[in-house]
Length: 80
Image 1 (cartoon, one colour):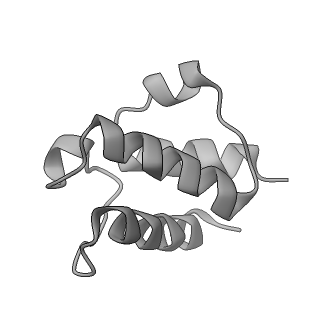
Image 2: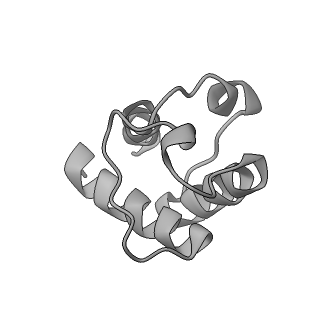
């Protein structure tokens, strides 16, 4: 699975968690760029991503995330 497909699936996850079907994620976006992406939403996005992609994140990994592109790279690195 490539980064574009991961980004598309991640966008669907964030749309569902934030209940905003118009949202379009870009690799350079941060949580601050997305209305409603607060700390609780972040946890829900992390958990939903783990379920969607069949992976697990360590707390330290998620704390180091700085933007959507980094999140996509982390997911890609964890996929078999």
